[in-house]
Length: 93
Image 1 (cartoon, one colour):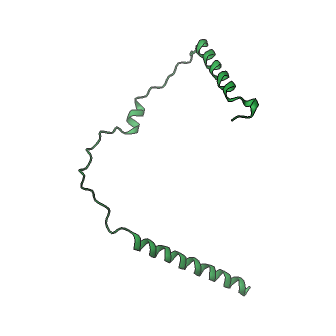
Image 2 (tube, helix red, strand yellow; image 1 turned 90 degrees about the vertical axis):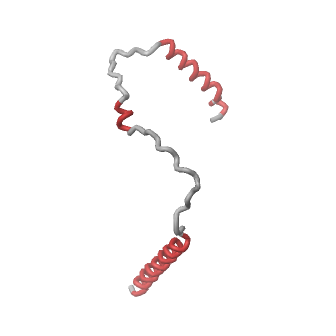
Image 3 (tube, rainbow, N blue to C red; image 1 turned 180 degrees about the horizontal axis):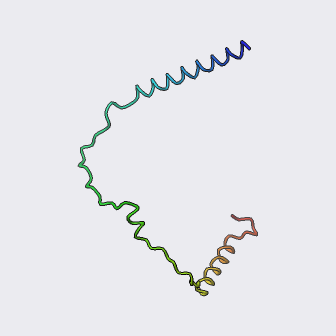
């Protein structure tokens, strides 16, 4: 029982010393003042809040949408060509 308490105290003391050394290093290496530049400040940009430009996007509420069969067929042809290009039977990709 006494050994376990001793191990805990040594661990806590070690972590405390380590924390103090890290804090000391951070204080010594911190810059005193932020770097300044001789360049002029950039002009302010006219930015729109995200909520405003997202509010301008309308939701498509159509329920009678029918996909173009020709476009679907072109997409399937492209997918088949890509599958053949990757040659999965040869173990590529």
